[in-house]
Length: 108
Image 1 (cartoon, helix red, strand yellow):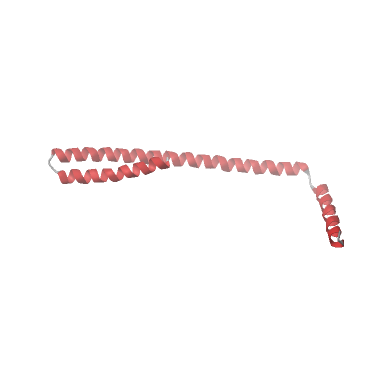
Image 2: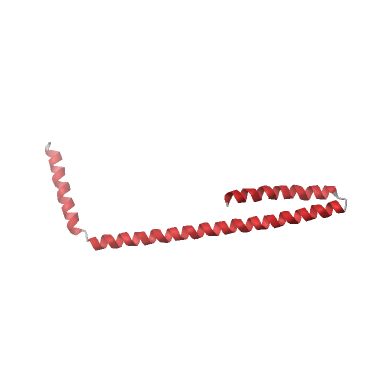
């Protein structure tokens, strides 16, 4: 074993022993406990954010479905009045809304 390796080994062992004496297990445990509480708070906040986002998407889906139903009614009224052009426009808009609804349902 070279002289340099022996010197570093002795230095590391002395430094480790000094750190062991300086370390208070209660402080280490308190610090670990505090970190766990912080992580728990972050997890709870994350869960709340996910729940809020999910509810927001559900509300968007409901609004879009109501708009789609309204467009269906408008298309039916336009056909009853003999306005196929208006009915076609309403159904085209409804088709776009249906695509948005499907995308949101995939996200949900």
